[in-house]
Image 1: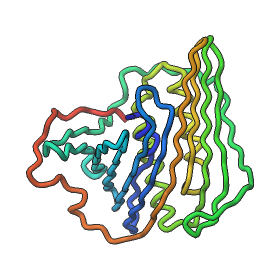
Image 2: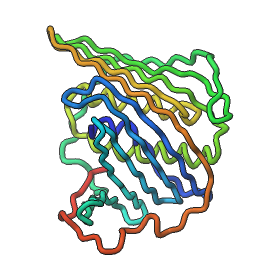
Image 3: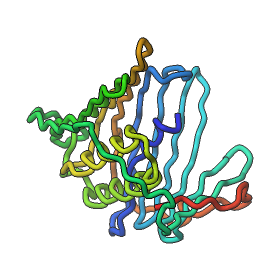
Amino acid sequence: MLKLCAVILIGCIYLGRADIMYEMQTDYQGMLGIADGQVAVQVFIKGDKARISVSTDVDRETTNVVTIIRFDLNKFWVLDEINNKYDEITFDDSPPVNTAETHLITEITVDKTGDKKTLLDQECEKIIVSMRDSTGGSFFSLAETLWVSNEVPAYQELKHFTSRLTEKGLKLTMGSTDANENALREFQKKINEIDGFPLEFSLDMQIGVEDLNFYMRAVSRVTKLDEVPIHDRVFDLPEGYTKRNTSKAVRE
């Protein structure tokens, strides 16, 4: 579930003027050990701050996770709304200890299909980013189909929002020597280079080792996107919450 949320939430903060709110719905299937379900995401962005609420509905049970990102404080908080507690994670500017590099052997393709359709009154273009690797006796393929527009409200803020959080997330795995991690990092870079914000995207992943195969599909749609004034207190820790963990450093 955490990996799915990471895919959904990839993005970043830009010091822009517009305050932005958008909502997104994701339907997923095929995740190992998890029943098919639905995720609802609500995002508030104001300058270098963001609040992301992720509600997951599985077997009629709903869980909610709220993350407050504060790049101005170089940290983010994950709220436990049931117990009124929070975890605090800071970004560490020091270089990672393990700087070993891996060689990317997976080819990544970007297909601008030319297909068009209208979403939220915006004309969107269909772009498919895909990669495939069948070395070492295993099989791995990933394809993301995006319907993007660069005419959405506050496009530049959203674009930078996507880029910066992706950058933070990518740097979490800089020390990894796993080929798939390296390929996923490059895959997301290709998506970030696309001119346009996705109002709909589907992710298809397949992994196989010998006779074992795993398939996952997730389809996400932005259902609402507006420029709205947002009060600063939306990005503050709620009153009465206590810190649950010691601050953990996330290497950039």
